[in-house]
Image (cartoon, rainbow, N blue to C red; front, side):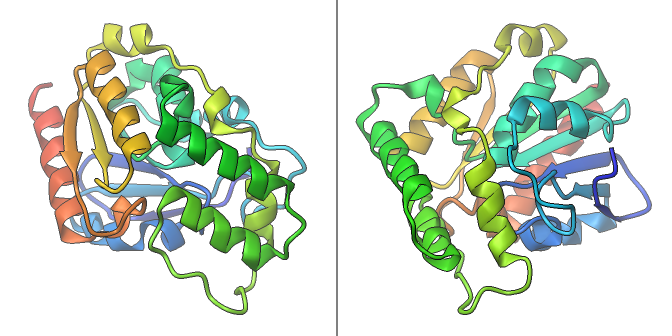
Length: 248
């Protein structure tokens, strides 16, 4: 596979963290890093994202299979944004290896087609992909469209243009389909976290909660970037993971 993978923590259950469209690795998960005191954190950089080489096309189906190679039996899987879409696909395929699944603000707009707020975001994201603006302009527009509060540096740091290239190369997340029946059959606990900032993302959370009998948390304050909230996110995720492990 050859993906760049970072790790932290030497004790406790394994937690695999799958990033979204923004900075990969600890660039996405730095606020979660304190959990390395309790868990073994596995933090892959998805294909196409630095320091991996660029890709002309990125497909969530293929990346789900690539990342599955990192998941040992008994692992906990956590995905944010596009990484949450990938995590949902993975759970339908390798659920027998997972102790739990947690997703934060997955842009699974295919679950809520026809929802006006979701359709507005889809239209805006399509427009951004087709625009001729420079990389930073596109990234700023993307962050605004999904409701992220993350600041975009000016100029972009090294690797910033590759981030935008990767986002443009990705298959649109609203095309993803999920095997909810397979996830339900495994009986794994599921947690869906939203930021309380968008009717579209809340509607997606409602569907996942209903389909998977998922626990639900709404953590406002950082918009789409729920994993950057810090202690409230970490405390909720840790409580979920510990409860899942206690039911073994």
